[in-house]
Length: 391
Length: 220
Image 1: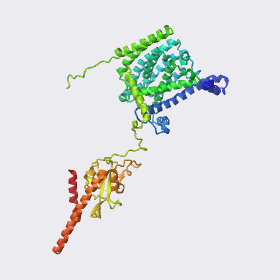
Image 2: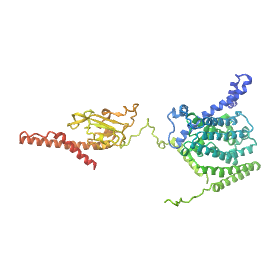
Image 3: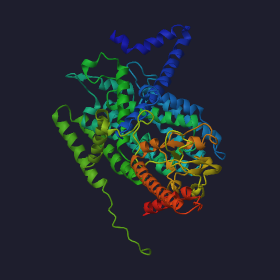
Image 4: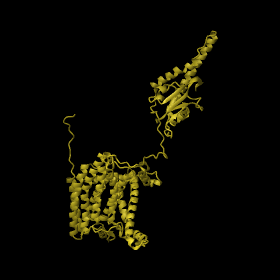
């Protein structure tokens, strides 16, 4: 029974495919998996948008949307209908083909990332040996769509937003990769399934998640920072900083194309949350051994939704960074720490079992953190502004 | 320490989030169509015409002097004087407005018409839900739509209405005293000498200087 609940989607797909003749069964299974992903994550996107609007409202001591349906739960439906019925405007001098392709490309790329994510036990669409590499390669091409949007709009705001986005995403791609490299070092595999299997063990009923190690914790925090910047999420939402650039790279988008950008952004956030959960939070494994009876996919989705809530919480708290602060933070703070974290992961690996490696690794990371905070992020103090000619 | 401020900020938003479910004072939003807060006493938007008593046509204070029409900055008031006279609230025959229209869509709520009116006939209303499907006819209010009772005025601006009532009562008392004195004088004259024609305009002309004087008092 527990096994059946765990594998319910697989069994459902098998049952549906069994109506087809033999040679068609395998393609049908793959197709069903794709359809499942394409249906599930936009549904989660709708829930997330509602959560975000309600949650941000509560953080700012207001109600948030509460008009459509009881407690406003049908707000995403209303939003969808609105964006579908709105006029689709393409600027006269825009490159119409690229302008159209950009949002489509973003959504395609973002959904492709899910191909390698282990959503549950035996629920990886493509069980790739280099799954992590595939995810990052696909994730990096979302920058292209952002730049396509900014360039083809023929709008200064769009172009500035796109330039900012590309600069930021490339800068934060490096620490994102570096922080997940520590996990690859420890597991010895780029396969996301193997990474989850390595964490899906328990001692004293507690899981072997990588976040419960010094290097894993540091790696997770750095990964979270880089992932926030990678998805253009507040406080790193400079590419669409509405107070400076109207809406950044999607200034010239309206109607359903805008909705696609919106969808792409959130589905991308969920994808990178899923990757973070897979790498550091044990993927689909239960947080306690006694909770092992709950289906594995439930844990994966709850981890994703939990990290979405954290994204929302951070957005409700922090103001936007300045461009130079953003770059300084990436290159002078996050990147050195991720490099050091790789070394710490090596130390952890070769010091053997025991309390000693906990002490040593934690000490290295703590000292580095304090040192980097003091030196690396030191602010330049400018004196009071002086005027030579005016006054 | 780096990151301390971020944690503090996260704590603050978490407190807001949790607190908004617990304490209702945090949520200051008034959910308008269902919830309303009473307007403050100084609220004003568009003018209305005050009438005394129960009949809006008989009790209308306006005497169609057209001062408000001339003073109105956006010229949203349109008045046609009547050719006949009818007794006003004090019982004297007065000209009354045959037409009195205000185009609410043009009015800018400046209250100048209220300030210049010597007869306390036009005042500012607080009714704001005036939306209509006809933007030309629907927002052009005629005499009937503009007329509202003195009780309504008392309800929306109690302090101001009480002052106005006191002033009007005082003027009425003065006018009555003067009329009485004039009547006494006329009676004395009639008794003393024969057939001196009494001044015809005295009942109609008397209140105007009294009102003007009152106006002067108010301006101080």
